[in-house]
Image (cartoon, rainbow, N blue to C red):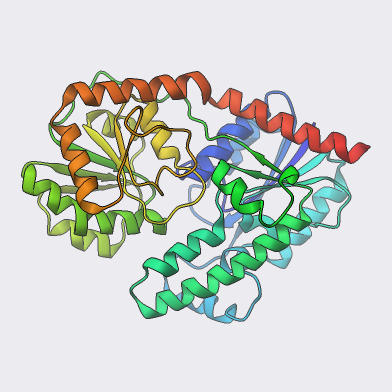
Length: 403
């Protein structure tokens, strides 16, 4: 197949869940198919996208002059788009120059299928083109904004969350209908979208993990150590850690005063930094080149998300390293896991704290759950197998379009 893959926000470095998923699927697809990769993203130094020419047949990138996240300039950018029907996450990326570039690519070459990667790129896709178009969703974006609205305490942020929720809800309805086929990353997301379009138009692409890269390491665990991995400039991760530090970690330290928490991920917010400074047993690493040593040295991995959607690749990475994971129900939403067998689920702060403490005190239980977790992902969720499912789904869409 000849595939045009359109992605907002860039692809490398693959340091967020969505980028990791897309990068690994694309890398596997490019082994057997012709891939043109087009991405548009905020211009930045040390841009690595030119390196992708070693993987794909063609790479076209369009760096954009976008304001820095959470800056005054971004507040202004949001303000001038306040009355746009498009959600800000789509409007800020899908500029006229981006749409022109996509059209030019389609006019230059004949593609079998166009993949719109994430809802953020949907505003750049020429949906009236005769080329089959597949929308690859990594989350139910409207649900994420709804959960932001539900947990927000700041009235301004609550109002913004409500507005983006409603805009994104409308956008998802529109683009799901325009797409020839829609991919989700979990059964839960598919069920949510089945209320919008016919179930036959939806397919699930399971979450994967590089089981060769994420293997158990022969590093000694730090006693009573808890680790969280994730991009800290992603709001659900920030909310999870602020909630954990305020509501759960104190309950853990009442039972285990020497318990430590390591938060591994780029760009922790000032609010999170201020909370961490009050705790002598908390470390924020910021960006790290390799998360594996941090996971290996941790006794228990946590995913206390209150805002979710899609699936959490961080869980599969920890599982592949045979680490026990304690997660909220939302954090593990959409993953084929079984609580008490290969993961531990807990939601109420006291219950979450008790489950973490129980594992910290029981090395044999940590080993049992970790080994079961590793066995699950090793057997079923390596990226080559996930890419096979993806490619077959695209081929089915192409074949239907030729009839």
